[in-house]
Image (cartoon, rainbow, N blue to C red):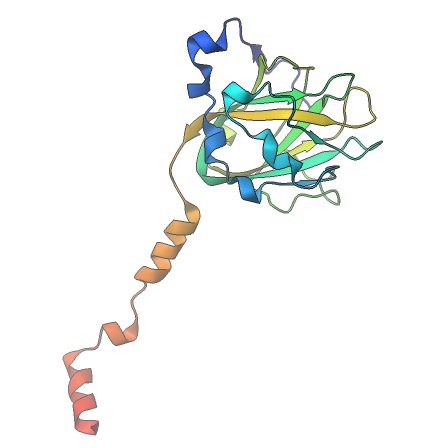
Length: 207
């Protein structure tokens, strides 16, 4: 069931309290690899993940195709993160998304399976034009996030969905899976690097 009340509202001036320090996970997104399904302008989803201080720049947006509000956005991180909260700023005139489902470490999600795949968490969203709402995660389920898939199934108007900003609050672990795997492969011993004295003597006798 979607969570209606897993959100909280800022009751202070973010500039005075330096909220950007808390909302810094966007700098750990592998932006060139961010991709979306059903976006009206290809590649526009990459502009959503800006610095917190630029969240109200409404010149940047990503919209679904007209008369089809569904959007799926795949967000890869440069290294694993622990995700605490999500901020979504949508469009005006009913174009803000009204629901969000998220999937962790699932790069295979698309429109053929998104309805049948259980989400890790889902929320009913509010229209958050000023960016003062955040949606808290079930933190224990978001401890080792390398990719996050976000599914916006509908908007308030039902016609199309518009997004201006998506921000993430949490912790950057520094754990890079690709590099660890590469290190393991390179560290695997090769037979020619570990010849015994008997092997060397045998080779000499042949020569």
